[in-house]
Image (cartoon, rainbow, N blue to C red; front, side, top):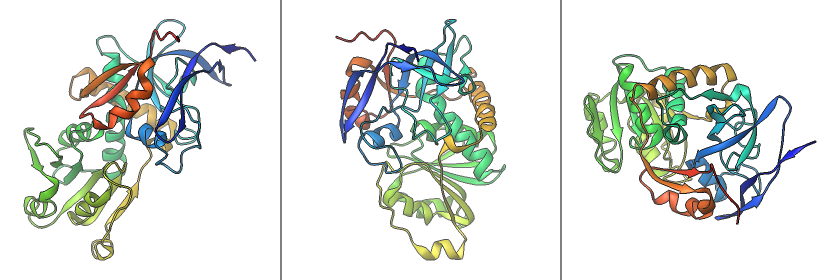
Length: 316
């Protein structure tokens, strides 16, 4: 089988990584593409730090999504794969990749491909959770934790479009028309006040830890509490009676386990959001691929996204 010359970032042990020569073979039903840029997501960092047990053992190539260019020079957003939930195929933090055309979505002119690399997955996730899992309706209330992050900020805009009462929780104050801001220290008391003592109908939670317990105490009857991550802590102290009395539903979520047809539908809807400028990511740093090992160590301290600029990489 013919291989194409390429380089990839390998996480060799917890917190350590290096760029290695890694030729790429064309997979069945796939094509070779040039990787332009890729976000360092919280999931990527957790896998790199050895803090995500379902992930593959070291050494591993991280990266679940990126912007790629095909042989015709056209740009696409791409998932590296969805068959294994995005966890069991070598990732896209590499100069070239073999990807199925089904998992590539064309980026129209006028849309910044780096914005797509940094923020597109957040919009797709927000739409999937709000429309297809929580199924929020106009007039219902939703609590969004980490509302200034990629998924959180997208979720705020999607929920507003659906006519929901949006309560946004974050470390730093958020000022958005029709959105009620609460700090984590004010949970659950302020949230219960904002909902007339009823609690919220849905929760989007990318934080975990003690904050998830505060969110649990903010839920109303039959609240759907969707856990997307655990950046605030792996251990979640939960109050059991809250699950029983109100039938609170805590649901773990992995976007890449959705059906391919739904993923494609969500990508189309998400691009509409980007074209209209409704959801644009906050990018803290753009890092040349040569500095990717260091970028993985500094990304956690950034207020916004870290994007690896992979196009044009030359190995010393």
